[in-house]
Image 1 (cartoon, rainbow, N blue to C red):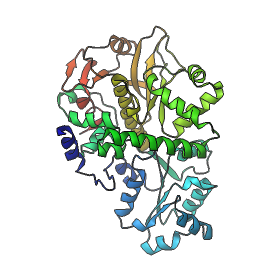
Image 2 (cartoon, rainbow, N blue to C red):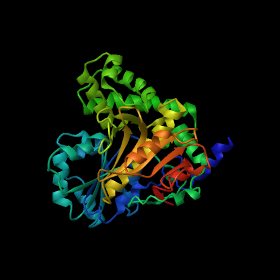
Image 3 (cartoon, one colour):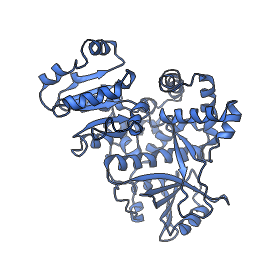
Image 4 (tube, rainbow, N blue to C red):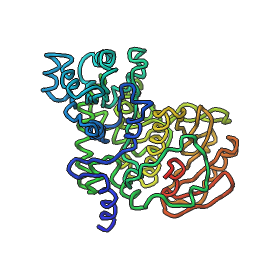
Length: 425
C-alpha cells in the first residue's frame, strides 16, 4: 500500500484518473515547428494514449470539436454524404485550425484520401492522424505521400513521464559516465512500470486483477479485430498460441523453424504471423549487429513485447523493459530528425553475447547489458567493448543505487541512474 501511494503521488501531476491523461514526450515533437508544417501521422501500440494526446493537441487551441473518429458511424455517415465534411467547421474556427482524424485507416482508399486532404487544405489547416499498424504502410507505399507528412511513434509510458519530468533527449549521443553520479528516478517508479506495464490503464489502476482483465480484453481486440483487418491470417487460435509461447523465449535469438514446429504450421505462415505481430505493435524485433564483428551472427533476431508484463521471468522482464526503453529513445531521435539511430544486439558463433547495441549511422556508440539482480560485470560486455573499438559499455541493473566504474569505458549502474545518459533531466 505504501508503494502504491508513492506512485499515485507521482502520477497525480499529470494524470486524471477518469480519462487517463498523462503528459507525454511525444507532445514536444508534435508541436515542433520543423515537423508541424506537414501532416503528422502518430503511430504506436493500441491504448498507449494516442487519442488522448491528439485531443490534448486540439484542446490547446480551442479546436476540440474538430476531432473525427472513423469508428464513429456519425463520422462515416457525414463522410459518405460529403468527403470534405470537416471543411465548414474548420473554416469557422479560422486559418491554422487543428484537425484530428482517428482510425481513418479503416476506410477504403484512405491513403489517397489523406493525400487529397493535404493537397487541398494543407496550407490552411494542421492535420494529425492517429492509428497503429497501417500508418507505417506510408513508409513502404511509394511516393504518394512523399513530402506531405512526418511519421511519429508513441510508445508505452516511460519512467520520466511517470515522474512528471519531460527531459531533453541526448541527441548527440554524448557518452559521459559522470551523469551516473546522481539518481534521477525513484525505484518505486521503476517498480510500478515493471509490475504493471507502460500502458496507462493498468499502470494507473495498480492492480493485478485489473492487469489480467486488461490483458484478456487487449488480446481479444488486437487478435480478433486488428489482425483480421491487417492481414489474411484467420487462424486466431494459432496466433494466441504463438503469443503464449513467445514470452518464455525473450532474451534468446528467435528461430522461426522452432516456432513453426511448436504451433504446427508452415515456415511461411510462421513468418507472416511474426510480421503481423510486429506491425500490430505487439512485439518489436531487435536484429543482430554484424559490421566489423568477427564471427558475428547476422540472421536470427530477438523479439520483445511492448507489454513486458507478459514475461514472467524477472530477468527476462527487465531485459524486455530495457529493450522498449531503448527503442523508444532511438525512435524519438529518429522521428525528431537529429540523426539515424538503431538498436541491435551482439552475438558471435562462440556465444559471446551482449543484450543491446545503439548504433548511429551504422557505427557502434553504446553497448548495454541488462541484469535484474547481478551487479558483477558480465565478461561478454568487456569482450565486445574491446573488439568493437573500445565502445562505451554499461551494465544496467534493476537494483537501486549502484554505480561502479570498471574502466574508463565500462561501468555498472542502476536503472534509476542509467536513464540520465539518454535524457538530460
